Length: 233
Image (cartoon, rainbow, N blue to C red; front, top):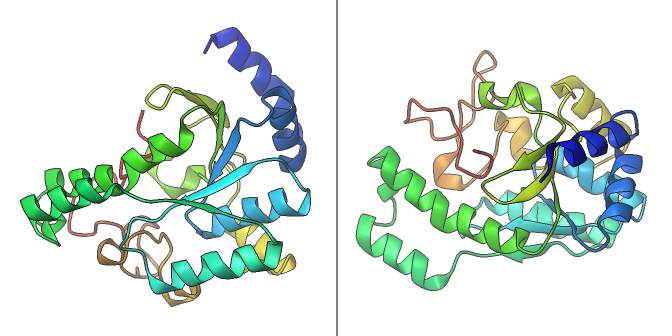
């Protein structure tokens, strides 16, 4: 991706609404704009905007095989409410079988290396398949979610996945997001009301205390930057 092109595109979408910016990207890259949803609150906001405005964006999710029941139920409710299809991507059977044979069903607790290997098999590799052949990847990242995300630009080049990444909610606060969800009656995961702020796989997610960092509930047994590899350059 040439820097001048990225700079030009950034300028084009900078002062547009989210719906207008996505529409512009869809016009520039027809049939090659995708949105990855984990069914989190941020992603539910973007899904609502895409559906409400009939934007030609392909929506997909990564089903790791270890998600909460509440997450899968929300997937069904979201498709029904907005009359859309969200394509699931799964890890390959052989990769999961080899992983479990090597480290055990819960071996990701034993070391950061094991956990990262599990994340790669269940999330990173399926993501690469989902992004293949596309030009723009829309995400629900917000700057205040973690230190690692605070310096991200709204539109950037993801060298690892060789795709342009658009983060339309980057500058939204938690209050902005919750207000939008309430005003637009957007369905969300009931676990959020039980202290689960950032929700991933069930064995790797716990509720947090009011004074804890939003990402503290992810891989809580590790002293890390709380990322799985999807958004690391």
